[in-house]
Length: 61
Image 1 (spheres, helix red, strand yellow):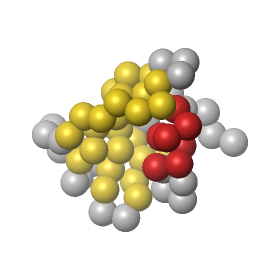
Image 2 (cartoon, rainbow, N blue to C red; image 1 turned 45 degrees about the horizontal axis):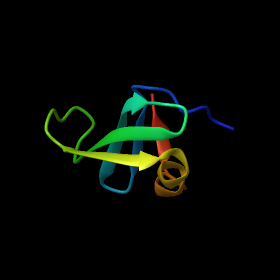
Image 3 (cartoon, rainbow, N blue to C red; image 1 turned 135 degrees about the horizontal axis):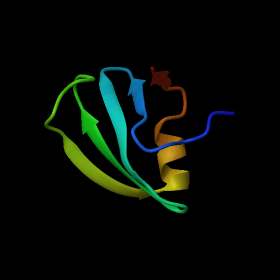
């Protein structure tokens, strides 16, 4: 089981999801098209929603 942490980068298909703010029950993440892109869309979701979103995704080291 992988522990979610602030700053993690996840890749699913052609999309990247970076955890910007990690809280106990909520996560804010930025969705980008490349791993080093500065521009992207910011989303605020519950931790459960984020886990569903990244199901099958891989953690980029």
